[in-house]
Image (cartoon, rainbow, N blue to C red):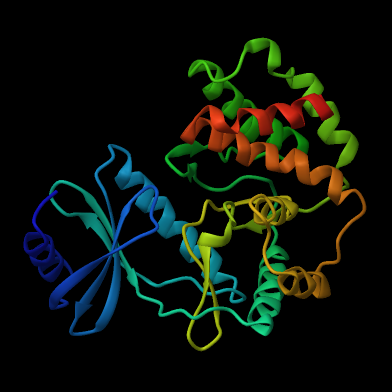
Length: 288
């Protein structure tokens, strides 16, 4: 990685903003994160030297804009994206945050539900993107079961098989997966999703405004975001109470939750290894 001063010089030249320093931030699994001081206040810089970083940051910026364009949820403003020498960079507004109150979480739930009411003619998105460092296929499909099986589950099973993380005999057939998803899914309209909604991908600003960060955007079943939010302990009850004032829970959600969490568990299996196999296997055994 280039020295901090060299990176700040590039940013000065590219943006016209005068930068005076940076502080490394913790918490990023995929990219390095920094808080920059400048003549325009604090800004947030993500850096990544991966071969796919340019595309990762490009589609992340597109996703942030798509969520913000709904008018129901905020995202950090994208200020600049480009090459910083040995790494790609994404420069965003820095959002000072606070520990959410019950009311903050309730309002966040309502905002997310309103965002989920934004629909489209098909499931998918205009561009493939990433979940972590894994490519996420967003090929358009009129059928949610077809999309979920062919663009979500099947690619992750194939990655896991290729990496010898799962045996071929443990992978359900496409026909079986399609039948199970078709049997448990209601008729539904595509909903605009964050796509990777765990506790580290939202924040509440100091003024109480909910912000979404690090999206993996597409149009899918709204319950995908809810299922991911519950995978590692769940959000505060007030969040779900706020959400359900706008979009009440549909019959069969508990059954679909495990099936939807399977996608995220397979992603974790492929990103982080065999410690996630048993959770995947439990769902496969139960449903397929």
